[in-house]
Length: 248
Image 1 (cartoon, rainbow, N blue to C red):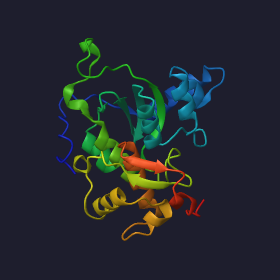
Image 2: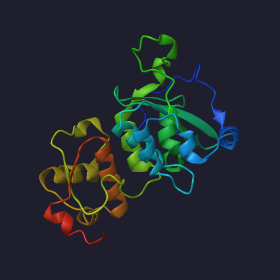
Image 3: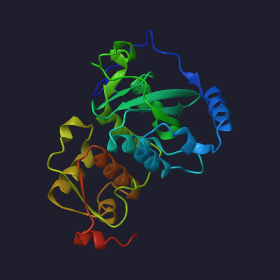
């Protein structure tokens, strides 16, 4: 993957990342100083619509998965910083939906190749950083730490912890790939490329897609999530194939 979609991050001058244990203590102290506690309190500075969306993803009080949170931020077009636990460190990933960029102080290739399966969202807050080109240059991060958002969302869907459909596209439905999707801009090869081309020609439900060669239910769900995050998925609830999906 290295070099295909991301330039290697320049290590010189890379910000030092906080240890996860220290950041966890900070969050515990912050919660203790509030009256209601929990993820909803830590999200208080976000817009009401985004906050309500993110609260749907709370899992045992530990917050949502990275792909869910990124999807919500893009859906609401809100600039946020997502604090992700990557091993023993915390990576503040800042998402700029309008510019289709992310700012990541960790080498983006290391994040994708080593940490995606175990990413954990620790905290979400409004972004302090500004996107490239903003007039307040002091709040714009170094250019080499900015990366395209689309491929990162793809890898989050295909390699991240989530193994089932995102709530927005789950349930009885038939799926088809949008004609406007630029497949060449994504790292889709081999079997998955063939599946995408097949879904350009015909609609199918999750059970059918999972039965296609070299696929299973998890891989089919990941693919559909990835296509949804690229705005390349057409979801039909009234299509006959949606009604025939008896899994639900």
